[in-house]
Amino acid sequence: MRRVPRSRINHAYTDADQARRRRLPAKWLAAVLITTAVGLLAPGVTYITAGRSSTTTATTTAATTAAGCRGVTPALLPASGFITNPSRTQGGHLWWQRSADGGSVCIGTVIMWVQYNTTAAKTWQVTIYSSRHPAGLIVASRTFSLKRGWYWWGFGVHQYYQGLNAVCLSATESFGMSCINIG
Image (cartoon, rainbow, N blue to C red; front, side):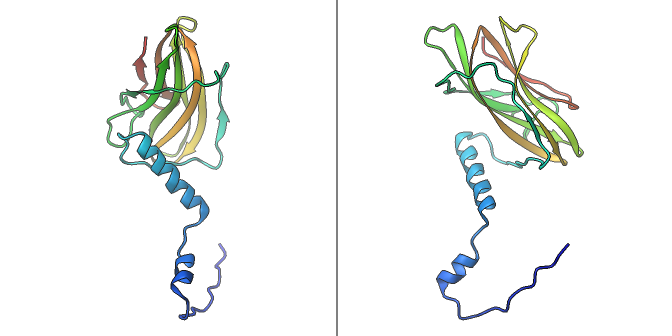
């Protein structure tokens, strides 16, 4: 570790200089803005320990993204095992919407919470169950190596699914699966 030498303090700074010196680095400011936005969009979220490992591997599986597919109806996924937020009130939440003809359902953004008891690599995944995929289809996944704590991640699914029955959240090496029936 290298120590950065400090310059001598000049007490003749103006208030504007002091304000400029106390400004947060850009990445901290971005983290605060994202956390605030998520807090505003998801009123049930009160405590967030969000993070990504620098060695994350992304694998997002998506069949076809439908243009304009945005969920507008919120739905809460129950807490189950390690799929839980710190207050154990939810395993995640999502936004969904039926198509105009009623035959398919758009899944917008899915927020998932996972509790880690030890440092581990886990693959978080969103699985849908429909008439076309009765055994389940993983529509989004991401692998994280994180330390002990609670974490959340938002998956922008934004797809329509014909005959959708359920949406489930799970993480490898963790017990618990959180599902919501939409059919």
